Length: 226
Ligand SMILES: *Cc1c(COP(=O)(O)O)cnc(C)c1O
Image 1 (tube, rainbow, N blue to C red):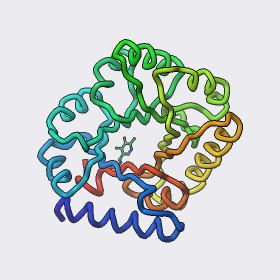
Image 2: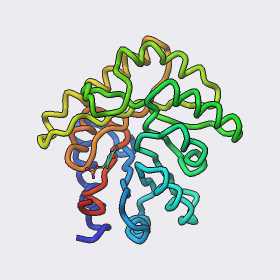
Image 3: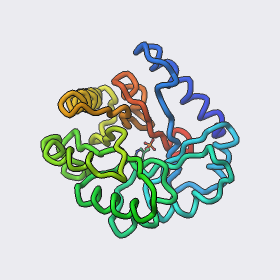
Image 4: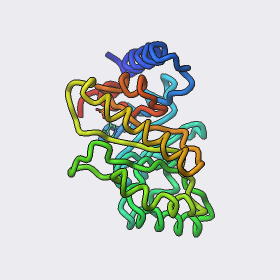
């Protein structure tokens, strides 16, 4: 199958999931995760109308991002960001999905200020309490969220999670609903707006949408196995 055909198949999957959950298609953004894939495949997806791309390494992001001459293209950094790479990453990144520590928030805020920019980000939550995953535990986040939200050059738009892998997408449903409920709780508790929920990948994006995802991150179903 071509990349255009793969995208059409995902599009129809997103559409059905939105219908099943009485949501509007416009509420869900597809990020095509292009990590490890060459730029010609990314260009092929762009030809087919795809505008949002995700990378998990700063090095790859900074190599690929300048290659498009289309202001409508948006790049998402979806992998852990080390503080020593912030300065390199920020100019290439439209949305950072992986704000995973107060230290990182403080450093991004400071560097964003130096670069005279505001960085849009999602806070990563380790919703399945997986020791191998980055992200705040829910209780940890409650302690620091007000401090994170007070940073003038950071704009927090929502939450992101990568649950522990389970081949059965239904097994992950409770993690997705858990993130949505936690988001609702934070919004009420702190009178803030966290509109975005980045959750769901190739094998479970449809379940994530049913549970409220506004951004799904799909790689292998578009670009093939890595
Ligand atoms: C690689 C990756 C994805 C995409 O995974 P697929 O299973 O290939 O769809 C999504 N999110 C993150 C954070 C990733 O690193």
